[in-house]
Length: 193
Image 1: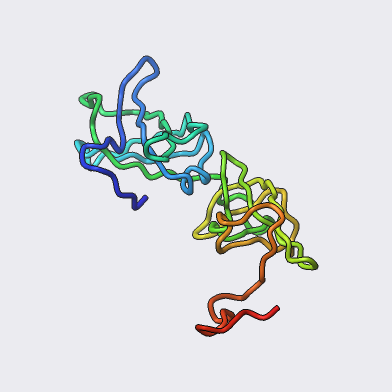
Image 2: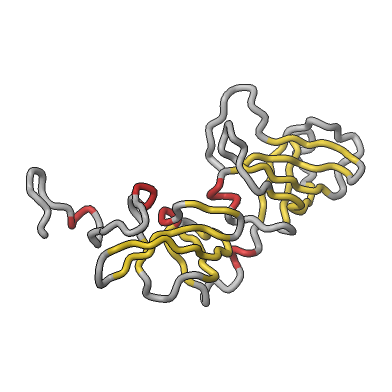
């Protein structure tokens, strides 16, 4: 997931309880938006490099951890080697099923447009093309594919969303629609009215 953590910070934990072994991992909000309960995973424990273990996502935290901003997930493991012990290190590769469903029939927006996300919903700013005024809109998301979020509801085809600087806006703000950095005025020039 390309995240930096402090030395000694647990990244994943494998533990055994009454329901068998589970793997706990802390992941970013961008990655947790892709996951659903029941997604399959392949886990490779460092102690058993040639024996991949299959698993299923069984829990996704509803809120992020206050200190790190990451979300804890649990993966129930199947057919763990008998000599495995609690605390083993490993790597999990989760295959989000939702991200691949109906990609061709759903809308996609840049992930940078997400202002706030929670589970399968997120907030974006939609621009009224006539007035250039933004309004917050709650959308449903199926997951993330590459740099895009797959939208399942809350947006119509052709609606404009703010993809750069969205976290700095507020409801009712007026924006200028550009096609990117080439539309910026030269240094020292005042933008047109």
